[in-house]
Amino acid sequence: MQLQAIDLSIIGLYLMSTVVIGLYLKKRASQNLQAYFQGGKKLPWYLLGLSNASGMFDISGTMWLVTLLFVYGLKSIWIPWLWPVFNQVFLAVFLSTWLRRSNVLTGAEWIQTRFGNDTGGRLAHIVVVLFALISVLGFLAYGFVGIGKFMEIFIPWEVVSTYVPFDIPLQYVPHFYGIFFTGIATFYVMMGGMLSIVWADVLQFSIMAVSAVIIAVLAMTHVSPEALHAATPENWANPFFGWTLGIDWTGLIEEVNTKIVSDGYSLFSIFFMMMLFKGVLLSLAGPAPNYDMQKILATRSPRDAALMSGFVSVALNPIRYLMIAGFAVLAIVYYKELDLMSGGRLDFENILPAAMLRFAPVGVLGLVLAGLLAAFMSTFASTVNAAPAYLVNDIYKRYINPDASNKRLVNASYLISVLVVVVSTTIGFFVESINSVLLWLVSGLFGGYAVSNVLKWYWWRLNGMGYFWGMLTGIIGALAFPNIFDGVGVFKSVASDILPLYLFPLLLLFSGTACILVSLITKPEDPEILKSFYRTVRPWGLWGPVHKLVLAENPQFKRNENFGRDAFNVVVGIIAQTCLVAAPIFLVIRENISLTATLLVFGICALVLKKTWFDRLEKAPADA
Image 1 (cartoon, one colour):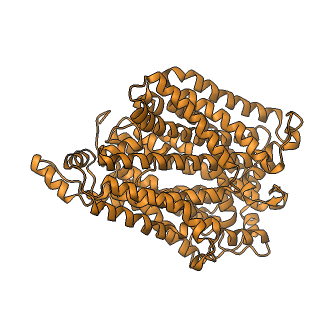
Image 2 (cartoon, helix red, strand yellow; image 1 turned 30 degrees about the vertical axis):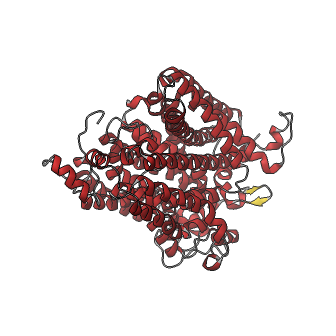
Image 3 (cartoon, one colour; image 1 turned 90 degrees about the horizontal axis):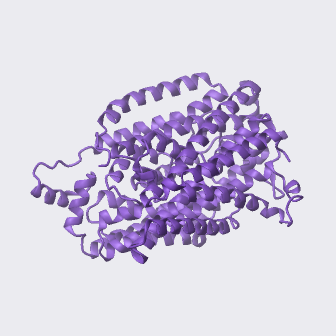
């Protein structure tokens, strides 16, 4: 066993705490679906924001980000735009407010406020549930793979095998650990719903904050700037780039050059432009139907929804990147002392757990490990909570048993939670790397989501039929295109893992054509539905005909003319968010001039946003 008694005690205490939280909150959460999935809409925005930040501090993503910083240095601060991480800025500036005004339980239920309940509206509703289910299964499989690979290093199978009455092939050992920890996470989210998620997340984030500071201090005391400079290639500490990446590990760690080639990031400018183009479109589409959307809908008011989304980046990035930078710096300088082998092959995704095992002192190791386990369980639990919200509220209650009691609905949520975990675990057995499933999710599946969900906000003529066919062709394209185009024509030289990003424009054209064409050849939505949506949400965009109808009924109605201000705030917000990523890295590697400049830019952005965003947030009632 690689862990000492005190480390195991800390981990055990944390796991027991989550179970107790779930059991304690079970009665309050089981009152009705709103209590179970939204905490009764009584939780303050800062707790929901902290919970959302905690859910994004996931173990798989953190392992991936440590690897990126190790390999690409400060240029790695741009790569998470693949998600895109700056979607939180779009949400904070305007989209969270628009979404929360609907006052619904799930994203699929929100679709009814836009497309009504005719054939097109029902098809749009069903396809959102389908998308939500596929994305939930993908993210659960992503977390399952990460936790298994992570724990394999700390608890070697040769030790565990002496205590269990069965044997497992080495390649499936990570999956065994994944099953164990997903079981605990599933239990506490089943018991307490959104309430247990939020309070467990507050505990988890507190652990992670302490752990991150300790690891950053360890790195700063054990690695001098001179030692780091000697161990890294030229331009490693420079966040800016030219046409190519400009990083060559020759003569330092030769294997890293192979990793860069396999990742496909060498032509970094093309990669960056594709990433930015896709990221802006996905951000304009609003939150996907997952735990992020559920947290927005759980806020008390539209104003709270905006504040919650804005708080996520402020809470998450400085803490997370202190830890990431600390482990990456230690791993680079002491690379030869790390064991990165997994299943008989070199795996750079093991840098984080290997560095923890090598550098974290007794007690601190248990604290950090408990925190990262908590991070995994937070993300996993929030995602598990999203699946039954859609299947129970939007399928079972709507189509199968409309008169079901609250008790029956909550029990059905328990059953659905278990089923989605079993299915996602099965999928996880066929996933080889965190990076591959991540890129398929953010570049493939969400690429198919983009067109329909951009147009639903900004174009009045999009109807339910157009939305349905746009989403359906997008999902089909996301599933089929990587297999069809892998190694074909212009995509021959594109790495398989990054292929979904380069297929994004094709997927956009494919789903967009279906979406727009079907909308134009079928009748528009009922004017009453369109007027109600426009009056309630008040979006900017191409809503001229609907605005005239609303104005005829209410001459005092004013259109939303904040497009210019919102666009400006988004740009300033992205700069501020990027500063919050870069600053802790510059602090750990002691690039003091760069740190000072970064903090200065952030300070200016914060002052601007105070005047152009915060001071102008509408003062909405508690339940708008």
